[in-house]
Image 1 (cartoon, rainbow, N blue to C red):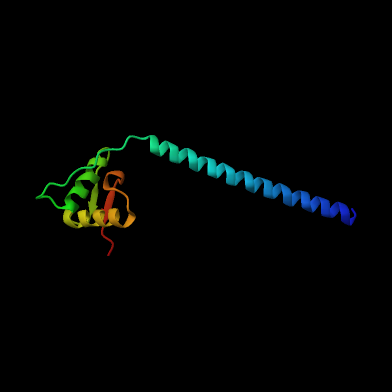
Image 2 (image 1 turned 60 degrees about the vertical axis):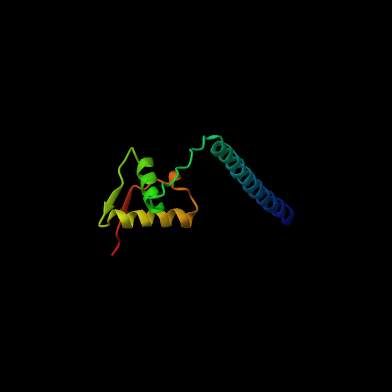
Length: 110
């Protein structure tokens, strides 16, 4: 094989690799658009209002346990007040509303 054929084969191989990478980028971009469209089409649940005598952390705990109705929130070595504070902190730091999170268990790590 002479140098011209070797260069042509190398360039063809590199071209195939870049074509596959470009098609993967387009595929991922298309899937992202589809997922965003599907998420927008879902009905939005109304936000629960906090009663004047009820704290925000309690409403977070209630929202988390209501959303986790199929399962049960399991507290391992932690009391309910601390678990409610942990759930409120997770909601605040992540920026995700409490009605979109499902807590399955909360465990104290010592």
